[in-house]
Image 1 (cartoon, rainbow, N blue to C red):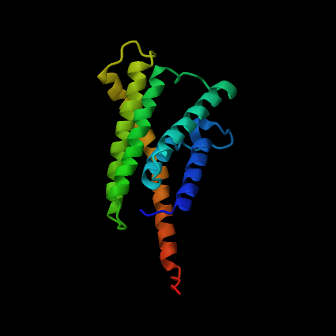
Image 2 (cartoon, helix red, strand yellow):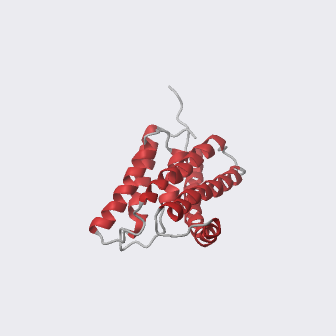
Length: 189
């Protein structure tokens, strides 16, 4: 994908705004599913600067800390396991990078996209959910069986939210490319 720096900047700002509007229900008037997973995946696909990943992680962390400090959100998830979100979100971002290399302007790319989204989401959940189970101190006897139960309970919801936003991004991308193809080409003078 050859996106101009200006286009990448606009996409980056839109992704940051989307995360701010949906992370942890920080805006009470919006009841959208969290887009955090999708933001990291799409940033990997669409944004080339490497500094984007740490910037988005810092944004997510600041949103979480602000919600706990000033919005009365529970601190249940704040534990040493919070740092498992670095490899969790990193797996989504790297999955996005992988898909960006695989992407072709062809309908069959959707199969690759779906496979990479599902795999990236599973690895992300293993880090985030597994990290919380084993390292938060909230579960006195963590086990693989309990992790399996948690995957069955939570992974489909997280995958569904991720698929919703990535699917919407794919539709917007195809629409933008179609519109671009319909525009008259300016001739060099």
